[in-house]
Amino acid sequence: MPEKLHPNVEKVAAVLGEHGVTGEIVVFAEAAPTAATAAAQLGCEVGAIANSLVFDADGAPLLVLTSGAHRVDTDLIAERVGAAKVKRAAPDFVRATTGQVIGGVAPVGHPAPLRTLVDTWLDRHPVVWAAAGHPHTVFPTSFAELVRLTAGTPVDVER
Image (tube, rainbow, N blue to C red; front, top):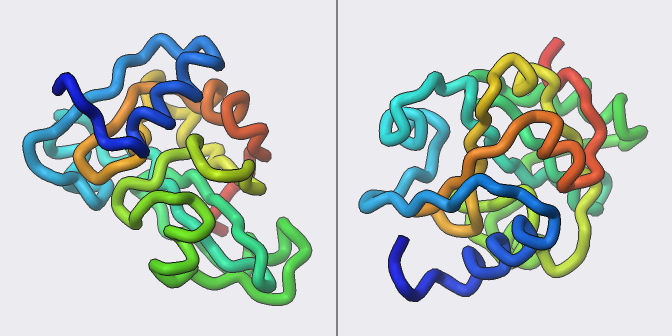
């Protein structure tokens, strides 16, 4: 890992350390803004990538950690959280909510805790990779650890 990490990555590393996460942050030479590019660089299945997607649920932020092999069914998610409408958040909403940019949003390290849903399909992989606050960084974790770290609710994100 480089000597000096991006401040967002340092925040994520601090939170991971506070929670006893032992997986080390990996820094890619090339950005990995999508599950497919991250999986290719890691040599794993795209389904083992935990995408951190921010949604606007009736104006409130909602973080959905979904398997890279899935598309989030926003109508289903709206039912799950009791929202009239859930839609993908605009980039400025994502940055204001998380302090991070799309393509590098981590499950943790945000200015304030976010209501979080965790895709149950991630439990099919013993090692899951999540962004670490910047498009060049990821860290290994597990479904159970993601639920614990985020105080997230396990759900199916597709019908």
